[in-house]
Amino acid sequence: MHGLLTDLYELTMAAGYFEAGKATEKASFELYIRRLPANRNFVIAAGLAQAVDYLLNLRFTDAEITYLRGLPQFTRASQAFFDALAGFRFRGDVFAVPEGTPVFAGEPLLTVRAPLLEAQIPETFLLATIGFQSMVATKAARVVEAAAGRAVIEFGTRRAHSPEAGVLAARAAYIGGSIGTSNTEAGFRFGIPVFGTAAHSWVVSFASEMESFRRLKDLLGSSTVYLVDSYDTLEGTRKAASLGPPLWGVRLDSGNLFELAPAVRRILDEAGLREAKIMASGELNEYRILELVAAGLSMDAFGVGTELVTSADAPSLGAVYKMVELETGGKRRYTAKFSAEKHTMPGAKQVFRYGDHDQIACAGESPAGAPEALLGPVILNGELAGPLPDVDAARRRARESIARLPAACRSLYEAEPPYRVDYSREVLALLDETRKGLEGAEA
Image (cartoon, rainbow, N blue to C red; front, top):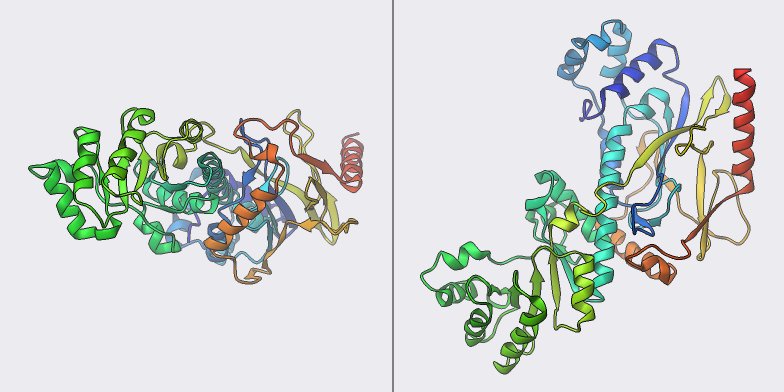
C-alpha cells in the first residue's frame, strides 16, 4: 500500500542506506513547523489518523518493485535491496500530539523512531497528510473564531485541489470547529454531519421559482434551505416565506449582505418565521465573516468553501521532517543542522505545556510543576499502542484547548506578545555538545 507514494530521493537514500550497511541503524525523526504562517498564532494538529493508517499498511508490491528496478537511479542497487522492499514493514515507534492540539513553531507534532530505512521512506507522506490537514484545521479554527458562536459549515470540495483533498479537508475543518460539511463521502467515512439542499440549477430547472421552492419543501420538510438569490433575493425570500413552516431557513449566496440580511430577516419575521435561520455563503473567509458579525447582522450560519479548503491566505505550513538522533552499534549520536535560518535542534524531544507557555525539553526529562506532556505513544514496535481518538474527540480537544490559550493567541492577527515557547537547559546543552562534536569531527 502506497509504497511509491513518496519522493524519489526517499527511495534512493533508502537504497544508499542499505548498500552502506546503515539500514538497520535506529533513527529518530521529528516532524514540526519551522515558522508559523502569517497571522497564525498557533496551528491545530490534524492528520494523525491517516499517518498511522499509512505506516501500519505501508507495503511495496511486485509491480512497484519492478518499476523501481527499471529506473536508472537503481541500476547499481543490489538484489538484496529489492528483497528488503518486498518484505518491508514499519516496525518502529511513533509518538505524537493528539489531533486537535494547538502547537507552535519548533514543537514536534510527530516523532518517528525506527530503523533508518523505515524512518526515511515515510517522510513525504507524513509531511503531506499532516501538513495539509493541520493547515485546514487551523484555518477552520480562525473562521469559527470570527463567527463568534454562529455555525460554520465546510462547503469547499468543488474548489479543493483534488476530490480526496476535499474529503480530508472536510475532516480537518470539522476538527477545527466547523459543525459539518457538504461532502457526503466525508460524512460516510468519518461520521461528520452533512449539510446541503439545492443549488441554483434546481431553481432555474423549474418554470417558476415558487414551484422549485414547493418541490424542495415536499422533499426535505424541516431540512429545507431555500436558495433565494437566483433572481431577486427579497422577492425570493417572500415566496419562500409564503410557504410557511416547516423549513430550516434561507441561504444568501450573493449580493450586499449588509443590506440584504436585515431585509430578509424582516420578511421572515413578518411572516411569523422567527425561528427560520439565515445562512450566508459565497467567497467568505474569516475577515469577511468578522465584518458581518461586527455589523450585528442577523446571520445564523456561514458556508465557507474555497478559502477554507485551500487556506488561501496561507496555503502551506512549511512543515519539516528532520533526523535528530541516530543509534549505531548501541552508541547514540545526536544530529543537527547548523545552516542559517534552517538550523535544527538535536535529540528526541517532549513538549510540556504549562498553560501560559510551553517548554521543548529532551524526551527523558521530568520537569517540576506537573505540566501537560503533549507527545504520547501511538505506535510501538510496529503495532498500534491503543485506539486513536475519533474525529469528534479531536474536535472537542481543539475547542477546549483553544479556549485555554491566552486571548492574544485567538486573534486573527499577529499576537503581541506571541505565545512563549522555551527550550530547556538540557536541550540547549545538547545543542552545544552536538556543535562541538561536529567541529571536532571536521577538524
